[in-house]
Amino acid sequence: MGQWKSVLVLILFVSSSLAGCLESSVDEAMIDFVVEYESDSGVVIETYVDGERISLEEVEVEFDFSKTTSSQAIETYGLESMDGTETITVDAGVASSLSYAFDEHGIHNVTLFAVDASGVKTSQMVSIRVDLRIDWSEAKTNDPAVLPFNPTPNNGGIHPIAIEIESTVENPSLIDGIGGGGQTVEFSWNIVDELDDTCQSKGGTAEDGGEDTWQTIHFNTYLLHELRIIPEEGQDYLNIQQTVSVIYGSD
Image (tube, rainbow, N blue to C red; front, side):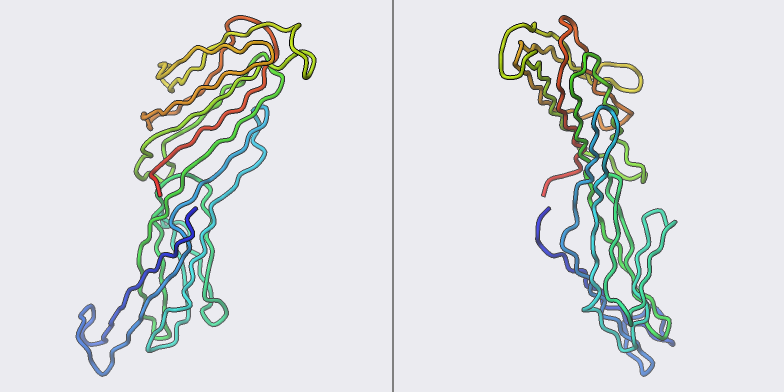
């Protein structure tokens, strides 16, 4: 995540006699709306071990309103979620910043706002890009679990641009550090969509004590998908390390 600072500035003039106009008047109130935040992107990380999710690392963004000024005292700072179902506010007399955690991938448009003592409210929408990374591991399995992933954002926003996959299948020696005694395992990797159509596939081979890796980019970012590893020959137990990244853009 880049350590640059975004600054949002909005100057709002409000007149009781000329609402919505930018002309001055004796009753004019002015809000100089400034919000700073370290980054507008991040990565949600889901970690799975033997098919069970063990952790979820959210993307937390702190919005700093401390440089916002007004001709009237600021009473409230706040944030509204993209779908309008969640609003977070802080008392401006107590705090000048708030944090919001994103736990799902997508382009999230949130509305930041300030309200002064006269009831004047100014707001501005900002977009936060949240990618997804799934870290998946299995140990000593001869029946690899299916890795499901859904590239469709739950917020109904735009779809990601690509899915990156890296999968390593290791055929560990029967006796650690000593080759021999095991057998070569042949298998295939398959990306399958919810219609049971195979989108991509590749054959792999892991000799006793060896491993094989598949790296690919998938551009179908619609429909539910599964990454499947299917052993074809050999019954040795396998160790599997996989990463699936749902990507919306690049920094």
